Length: 299
Ligand SMILES: Nc1ncnc2c1ncn2[C@@H]1O[C@H](COP(=O)(O)OP(=O)(O)OP(=O)(O)O)[C@@H](O)[C@H]1O
Ligand SMILES: [Mg+2]
Image (spheres, rainbow, N blue to C red):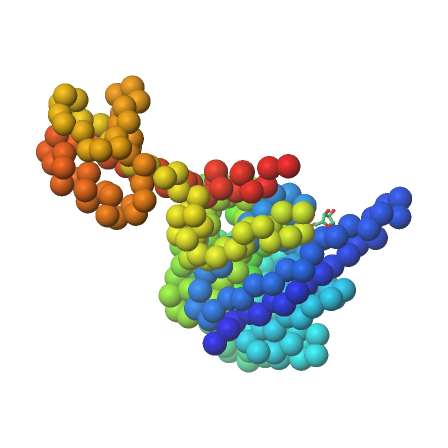
């Protein structure tokens, strides 16, 4: 089943000096239930706009969003029930304590009084916020506020969790923790959509991505397919004995040898078979997502 179906979403803002801003231009994407999906793009690409439309906060000019089959505009309540959303900006009730906020949030989703305490214990433990239970939100550090935002979104264990830049401005330890939590929730069955600037996060976490730039999808699909498409077509290797007989087509470049590749698997086994233990090192030029990203978003 599809957790998310985004079809031809277009969103226009009225910019200053009467110029329209095309924040989303005909964006489509699907997310299968159970996946972790990354939405990548530079500042202003239109990621948060799309997240706001998916989560029903903003109406598109054109297009359609379905969450677990429910249209976000026509069946808003049903669609929203499946979702937990962590927005990019920190929005929370600063005058209340962490516990009060979570008590209210879980109640809003229909948890009974006895159940709420259990849910709060669990989520505070998940996010290492136990010792801040009685702290007012305004006294939390930025990273802790972000953790509280995540806690609010996951307290009722949504089927679909959306995180808009959950790790921007947080320290390394919290970043790791956040991704551990995301992975764990995903293993337990939650579908995840997140946006990020950190390409290595997308590389590590998700199978599929959409890369957006200036409101448009410039690349979409499985990370491994995209990498393959942009792979520099060569195998690079070093030898202990450089006087060895070379395979046809091999070029020498400094200490390294290069072989243009037609089929990576076939050519790699050819190299290994031919040079055997004379191989000091061997690698194929798999483009990093970062290089692809830069290439595709270059003006
Ligand atoms: N409420 C609004 N009114 C007018 N323009 C807006 C509004 N919200 C977003 N925009 C514009 O739409 C474009 C896309 O913004 P958006 O916030 O979706 O980008 P983003 O990809 O989330 O960027 P970032 O990585 O910085 O969070 C930008 O040009 C932005 O200035
Ligand atoms: Mg954004």
